[in-house]
Image (cartoon, rainbow, N blue to C red):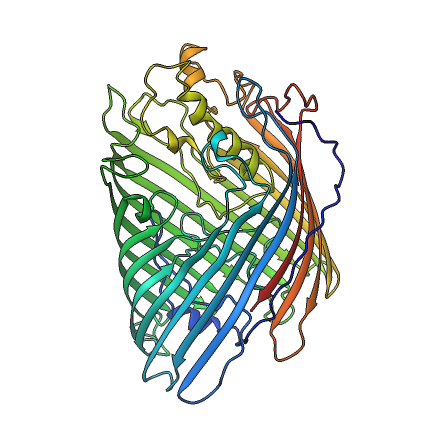
Amino acid sequence: MQRRAPFVLPWIAVLLGLVPALAQAEEPPAAELAESPTAAEVLAAATAVAADAPTAATDTNALTLSIGLTGWVSGQYNSAFRIDPAGNSSTSGIEYASRLRVRADAETKEGDHRWSVGGAISVDAIDGTISGGADSSMGDKLPGAAADSVVLQDAYVGVKYGKIFGIRVGAMTSQWGLGLVANDGANGMSLERNDWFTLTHAADRNLRLMVHSMPWANCETSPLRGLLLIAALDKVIDDDTASSADGQNAEQVVAAAKMYLAEKRWFGLYYVRRWQHNDVTATYNPGKDLRVHVADAALDFDWRDKETRQGVRVEAEAAGILGDTSLAPTPEYPRHDIQQFGAFGRVTYAGVAQTGLTLQLDSGYFSGDANMDDGKITAFHADRNLRQGLLLFDRVLAWQTGRARRTASDPTLVGVPAEDLDRLASGGAIFDAITVYPKVGYRFTPWLEIYGGALLAWAPSPLVDPLHTRTDAGGQPINFAGQKADGRYLATEIDLGARAMWWLPEPWQAAVQLSLEQGFLLPGGALGTLTTADNTDNHAYATRLTVALLGR
């Protein structure tokens, strides 16, 4: 158990030496991004190719080369809170984490209607917690996992004929829409994708053979001029449900279509058919399999001015997953049907009513699963890099679900633990929730901004601790705090932040950003009390100080 820390803005010292960007290229135009087909993991199908690093280009008629560096380092103070029915608490104190990405892109340039060849390689030199993280013996996929080093993100080559046809092969990350099911983890790494209260980690990665085409791109009068078609074959390297390094083998077929109405206004559909089969020697879930169909629809209509960023942007995404699996079997149901649904949307209103003012509203639905013995798996888990707030999903529920496997397999309480209990851990993903998250920010000067938001969350299905629901309540749902739910309201989380930005001199198209963010969470009846023997205050809080190097 941990001693209770007072709710204050604790002093955090973060030492950072960021290496200046090696080179910087211009941000590719949206029309060029439209050429960049996208693809997916279990729930995905599209990969974005925009440079994520501050770079500088050698501009010749034959070859464009860009090399860059982005990253961040943070110190976060976390309070302790209840994580299981026995009253054990999470760790408290400061965690230091960092992410550093190096990227290089090269492409020949011979005009829009000629053949060109290109490729890219990017590596996260470090990613994760470097000091103060949780003890892994306390649970699975807990916040503050130890840092990984040299994580390959992209390593591909390709050839294309203008926008008409292209083919690409190699290792690639995935992004589709808002990143509900396929997320490249680039938020917080660039000026274009610099969301409030968001730090991401290594992305979904696949070995991929991909073809893409805009058949009517040169037909100026055709209504189908902006149609992008994509097809891909994937071998999963690592994502939310499989890791080839652990003997979890997954392959998938991808088909997608994206219709551009303007440079930054599009809607699209994609479909993924995935097969996963784990080796009998796999670290987790040996010998099990998974077969799913995934359908996802997304749109992004951006009416903001390119220079001033003032205007309105509407983004939305919805995904359904159907299939079956031998994971988490029971004597009655050796296979389970999979029926899951998730949706997420965002509306941004920037600088229209008043220069410097930004209003933003996020809202989402993520199906839950209150019955583990009905032959169905209905809990939808969003991609781990889709974030809302600092505490509720990223920390409190990550700790409680990660702890649940340990209590459910305690030999003093159960004879033989149920299979595949490691899958209980959310790893910080949003699940079993209806969320509303209004936010507001005001930019006083080009370099200073303050912002805040209130995350409100409900549980469509009761939160379920698997062991204590069966042993203490005769099947009536008991939450991870060991209590029967009092209603469906999960929590109220108040988040506040401020950040300052300094632009590097030309030719560097990059900026250094310093941000200070605070989250404070009050649990609702569905989540239950967060008090422990050493912490009688029924809340949780965190304070994070981050220094980042952002590129175009």
